[in-house]
Length: 585
Image 1 (cartoon, rainbow, N blue to C red):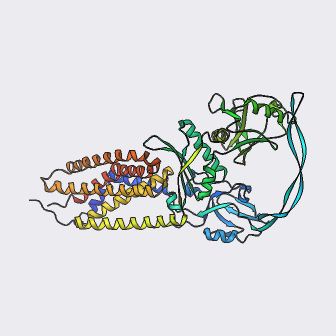
Image 2: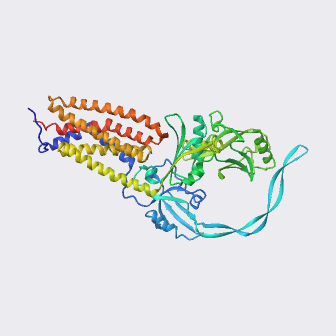
Image 3: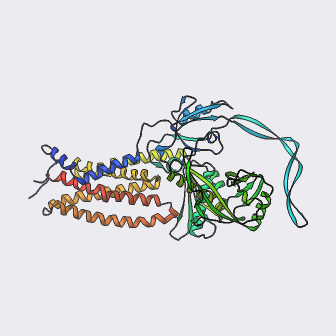
């Protein structure tokens, strides 16, 4: 009759370790952990601050500091080293230095990428006085004589209130900074604070129209200097379309101002509006037939790299075409053919913010045409990079022109506001509860098996699954939020349950007739795989439920359980086989 006794490693510890580290399954887990370690890049002793966003037209923006791309990894963000030679240790130290900078002086800001010279501008306030002054200005009006319409300048004098500008102090540099991230793991809104807005088109729209609205909203938010933006189309189980917008660090007022309106796009020559989006622009080409790299100019070497030219066509309404001809008729031509253009540029404004300025070809001077070709350039260090940047710049300009005014009105369905303080509290509580859960599960396993050699592998395997899931988030640039944390907890709970099944089947197999290790593990994994497919199919509908708000939970659960079934649990089965193979007598 067989019986079990306490596991002892005396005389066999070296042999078991040799078998453990000669197992292919164990090495697959180790290599996976190393790959995710590289993706996470943990740095618990990181100090200093990094730039999260740059305010448009601020001192920092004018000095050449660029707004970080939303897809940039946290560890790749530009870190501020010194300001006027003073080291910046954290956010508090940064604000302490900035608050003492003198007005109208130039300061030196050194980062991990470059050294910038910023001018500290005064912060002013304009006060309206109880006095008036006469102001003379020139306005352009249309005048029709004998059937011919022309533009004439008229001098107008009007009375306006007198104002006085007062200096209130130093204007902020225009940098939003946070403490240097300790890993590449992106934090969701619940963990860092911000706004989540659920928008819905006022009427049903096509998939192409919905994507145009998404591109337009991204462009609008980028124009206003907001970073950490996620704009994505989602739908619910009933087939209704929504747009989910997540903005870290924004306020509810900003979200409502920027998102709850159709927007305004207009193009001007000088001070005169030429055409407006939504009424004067009837078509913007996005197909390969009438947009892309200019075949006549192509790409060529430029100073410090390569430059490529792009083009695309737009169609104007007849009224806008005539208005464009009237405005350009009296402009002068500058340059030598074929690089000749008109003396005034075409300026494009999105929600009253100038986003682009283009030269006007001399061939359009005074010509009434509804078909206009837009062209521009993109640059890069290599030819391939120049092509990529050029096409990206072209797409951005197409989006500005095509969707400056959204093709459909939108309504705010839901607005969730989470403060940064609450986000910090969420993070701390999640870590505490996670630690308590690990401790509780360990105690339960010790009571169940009364053997540390069985309880510890289960806990180490569960921790490995958590690490692999977090590494996957860092690798693909996903944001970790509360829904994702809930998914990790579910995945770990499923993993512990599966490992208990493997352990029990192994022990029970020995007491029920001495089946081989292979048969015991095979029986355990048949149960595990059935549970895995059941859970995976149950999670798929949640990806689309709740207008995408439960997507993080569903995807994280599937990813975590998949890592367990394919990588960690086969290794755990082998580990249990090695640990228990000499425990029966």
